Structures are given as C-alpha cells and as structure tokens.
Image (cartoon, rainbow, N blue to C red; front, side, top):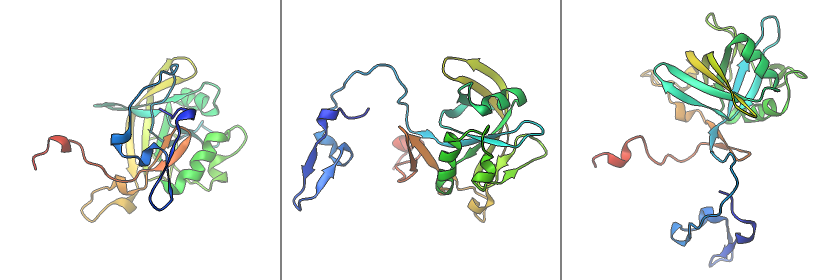
Length: 218
C-alpha cells in the first residue's frame, strides 16, 4: 500500500543526510498498522509486455499490457486483459492470434510509447524502429528486438467489466540467441527484464533466492 500523506517522515543520519521513505528504514521500526481502502488494483509488480498482432492485409500493431500472466503449465496457457475500445482488441478477437514479447531495458521507451499511442493513428513498428518478424506457424508477427517471443492462439474470451480476458494456448516460443551460453542454456534473467509497478517501470535487480531455497538442506 501507499503511505498516508500525513505519515511521511525523514530521518536524519549522523552526517546530516536524510533517509527518504520507508524502504530504507530497518524493518524493526515498522509498525505494520493497516489502513482500509476501497477495492482496487494493487497487485504489483507485473510484467510489462508488448503484444503484437495483425489483420491480414493491414500493418502490424503493438499494444503494451501489464495485465498478462501464466494460467496453466500443461497445456501451456496465458491470459491477457484488454479494454474493448483498444485498437488491438478487435484485431486479436478477429484473428485469434497474438504474440507476447517480453521487454528489457532497451525496449522500455518503445514499450511506453506503444501503450499511450493508438495503432489507429500511427505505425508503432515504424515509429519505434522495431522489426516485425514473421514465422511459418503464425500470422501475427513477433518483435525481433525482444529477448523472448511467446506465440499464442486464443481459446476463449471472457467478458468482465472494463476489460475482457483473452485465454490463449502457447503455440511456440522464440528466444534471442545472444543470451544462450555455450552449453545451450538460455539465461532469461540476464536479459534485463522490466516490470511495471503502480505507473512506473523498473528493471529487475538483486537476486534474493531461488525456488525451494527455504527448505533446501545447507
């Protein structure tokens, strides 16, 4: 949760510098008192992704989304949520295909641009100097500059409220060979992936652990 406006404090250190925000305070100083808010979306951070799509005979388009996620591992399935008024909504609903392109530091500016500009008005691939990459198995192009491209086929559209949810099966994946080592291992966490949190973009940082480390024998 955000801080209450009246509760922000600055603590002075011995050298006169101010320590800003609760992030830098020791956990022992936190009271963990709670304030109730009305229902809303505070499930952050989320992956910032660029979703590419294309109608036959038209230019390809990109929509930036943060509401995207994994929903099943076998079969591999994902979901994306889009407002019906968005240009890409109609394209994806008609074609039944899209590509989730993961975002790294170098793509952050383009990611923001593709989230605030409409494909009705601009050619986002052209304006951001991005390369549409076509395959033999999908009509929707991927973004060549993205480190990971996840090809998806829509299986169901669920109407909710402000957004509709597209459930999709993963039909293929391509990865950037620049992040492959000599043994053929792909180093996803070395690609500089970007997350979106409460209106801001962040690059993933310090590794804190790995799956299962809490029960791993020392």
